[in-house]
Length: 289
Image (tube, rainbow, N blue to C red; front, top):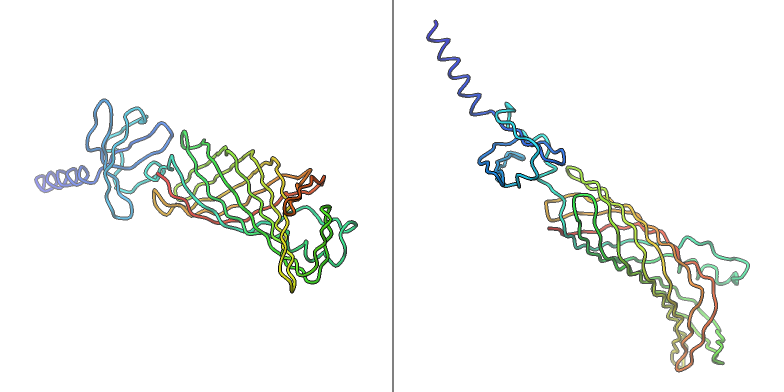
């Protein structure tokens, strides 16, 4: 009986040693249930398990706060935030719907043009960007946002300061582009990242108006330049260490104080007060490393 008990204890201790796992705690507070394979003065190599798959990686000793051998009795990973470490570089693109939030001035707009200008408030938004992060939280970047809205109006007559008068069907197209540096703050989680962005940049406004009739078509432009600010909040869903799917909401604040009329070789500066502010709802994809 004593021999049986002795060998049972030996077998139990042997099994415990086989199953016991080590604890690795980083300076950022992440705890990893892992097996330490090698520890030197400069780095630590360890093995961890995710969804029944084993991986091996190395971390700088300077990023380690604590190591405890044989700390766990199971091989489950308690916190994989270090494994799914957010990328330092990101390149992405968002696509969405924008809506200019300034109300229409019904007092100065012909009632027959109300629906036309209302259509121009909605736009398609495309936004490529690139980001660099100094650490897991803070980073900077560059974004270029383009919005396009279109509307058509039948049987119009437009008289310009150039002296030209156009009659026919009006195709009205507005492009608003924004380019500027971005300050990023993110909160990385295990499978999602919360991202908040702020930006101050330059806005290019271009309104292309084409009037067509039986004799042909004529085109003139209204162009403007302004500064604006961008604020947005995003949620990034981690597909793997390099691929993320994004969804977010943004707010552009800007206005025009003057535009330049271009009608052939004729140009004229026109004072205006046009609010370009819009809200955006967008989704996208980003690649990081």
